[in-house]
Length: 309
Image (tube, rainbow, N blue to C red; front, side, top):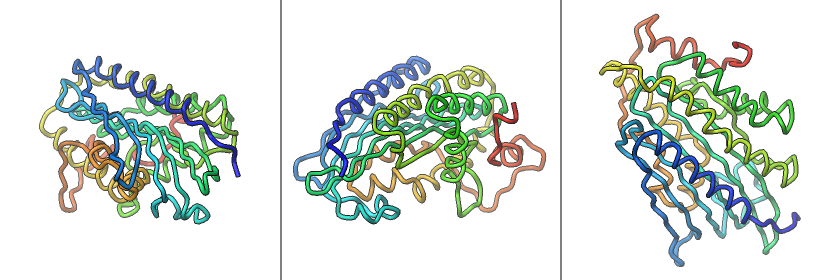
């Protein structure tokens, strides 16, 4: 058994991170993020509270959400015990910040961040505690400078905790954010890790904070570099088509989405990651050699972006 875990410092950090990100991106957009605080009713299967910060139809972001949640349940859902059968029947406590930003300009990439902590309990004793998360970038039109910048920020976030972590988490991200039914990556990756406690509680928590703190320096300079690029209906049409891949991944494979829906989480907050406009086409193929084709041939390949520098 693990000693009892005090989640209060983790909660305080996550709330502060959510506030910093929402305020910074709201100022970038020129539209303040709306605040939707919620609390589960006593009779509901899942207990807890959270805050959703959301922008829709902003000047720059077509849709974006930064959600904080802190929930507790009497039994873990199937998605949480599939790889950890010893935790079947455990109660749980989970808290985290998760965000997805969908800019309107197709030359500005969609981004995802998640940092979270999970505790499993049995008979009022903590039997498992770990951290997870990461960030990944999903461009519609690729820029090598952007990919290198994002991956440098990811590497630098985890470098103080071990030289092997970035290559390990980069490979994990490439594997995790992969659409198996299409055999293609969702984007150009970043870092991802889960069930992480190998550094001990304090160092694992410190690494989670480092990843969260790295998000704005990783993403905002890319937006600043691309926000003024002109675009037309062709670029918007391709963006909507590629957004379909985002929806497919989130609904079929994403562990956080499945955990939230299976555990009785707040659907509106769980699905805030969905893009507002999406398009699917039957067996569509881009023109060879076009910028749209180069997304697949040059960027959605699992490249080592730091070696490409």
